[in-house]
Length: 258
Image (tube, rainbow, N blue to C red; front, side):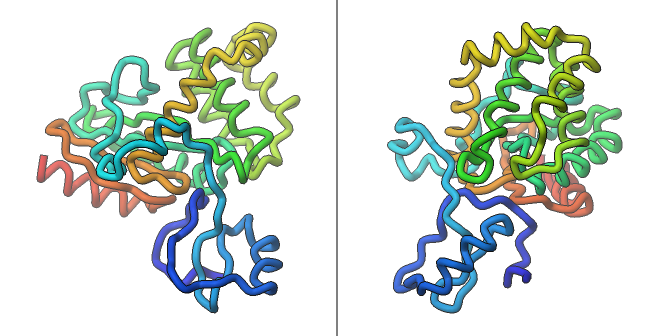
């Protein structure tokens, strides 16, 4: 069953607000069956499911005017950057390691970096946006693991972990972390015990939450959610798993407008 929209695939995180729509019992049953697809019927109209993330009270209390892409947090050396940090175009992606559409978009972004990254035209920043309602078992654990790998193996280790995980995960909380994570640690060359101690300490939990809050502030309501930022500070939204052609067209527009 397809959504009656041209929007690209995305995992929904908050409800569409429409007045006058009331759920009927059949729709409630259907919502349970179709939550993985991210759709349900309300009053005969297809809308996104209510699959909330957990923004902090700070994000929820922010003025409505800040809920836009201009609120994207400044890119710093603490970010996970693939490519030239001084590239004139930077794509900031808020992603969930267990989102199937993020897995698809990850391939697209690696292709983009193959084409534009080597020449220094485009850089890619990865930030966390775990969907707690859809992926309560794995998403935040893997996000924390990626930060711990970054602590032990640096930015290259982080991207090796992220590329490796996206390549093998079946998504939607079906990843066997007891098998997958140790294998990735071995491939990267980090000590499994050290990573597990780091995860258990919780020292990157707030960092992950800060990314979630910023995604929410910028208007992110599903994954993948990305924002293209130019050298001059102009911002352009990239909502969902857009195609490579669409992303390239936006890069071209951003390069012309500066």
